[in-house]
Image 1: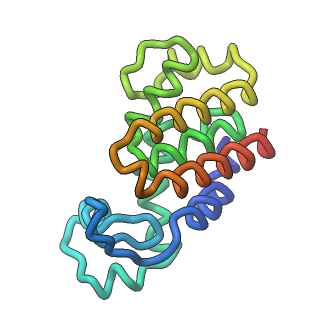
Image 2: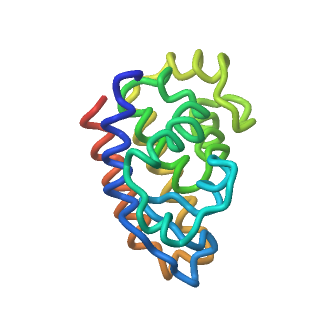
Length: 169
């Protein structure tokens, strides 16, 4: 829902944490969940390590809004489901999150949330969709090669997102 972006961004930034540059993570330099590559693409210029370390919520908010929230049509999704879709989109890509939602509602999984997807969503109870998105996300995580490294964190995040999304619904 339109009113939920700011609240969802706060929850997202809690999940994402601060600056990291883990050599095991292909994302490279990351701060507030924002990879350097994504931030550079959004700005249209190179970014230094110091700039990455100094990122603020005000810096990354517009990127998350344009690249994830708007791309997944979260303003048009029911409250709670918007959070579920958004958090997974940030964590694993907008296409993956959108396709998971489309599979849950038995729509063609093309990775773009459009009128047909939104119409189908309206035929379901939001809480049911939120729970099914949780299950799909957990299944996805458990089948990743790096689950043994990051799995407990991913699972915790997924469970927190489920609980928060259900509270919002």
